[in-house]
Image 1 (cartoon, rainbow, N blue to C red):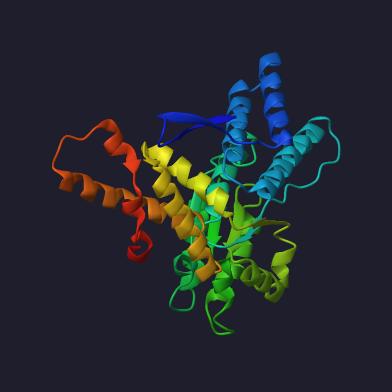
Image 2: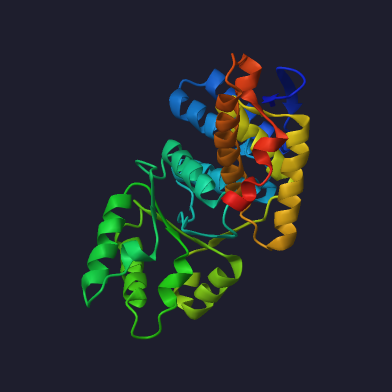
Length: 317
């Protein structure tokens, strides 16, 4: 597919975003099914659009392949059930492993919408929580809080960020009570709830090892790799395009320099979160610069981010 990216020398240039062949094939098959059949055209069309939206995300090739596998698995199991063949139970609780800013929440939200369209979830909404939303301050309080969050998520996905923190307080910590309540919620609402536990890879591996009962309940593990510098620049272009801004040539060089420097300084430099923060800061600095010019502003003036808007921005985030 082709996406328009703002460029400093021209208003817009077309940039090819390479999609994996399997995803193009999947979309083509869905288009063909819609054209040939009157059965559930809206859900098929929506599923196709969601698949394309997922595919349009920068990077994440292995993640996209796994989501495609899950989607295909669900569809085939439905067809097997229709033919009265033995079908596997749909165990779709997942572990998302990766550093902050690698797309875990975004993919979870898209997956919820996809699961709704294929009939796995009635609502497909995403409820994001962390330890503080589940763990209480006295005996019995934790189970109550956890049940409330499970209830909110019924029909969709309960996404627990930094889930490993539930097991870090020791034997007397109420985190274990939250884990027990989550397991019960999974069993009580087997066909109406998907849980996604998310966090750093090492911490999530430790979390599963220290809670062996969770391993069999979360059969799908998806690793989210850090973005490369080129991918972070592509993400920046897309974020700016959505806001109708673009980088000058000098600003693009400065942006790359900042990303490379931060990656050397910090092993986990924030990924897409760093990009978003840099862009938001640069837009504010551009606004100050433009007002100080005290003259009529052209359309390009209002859209271009210059190097000076980025210089020092990272130190102010």
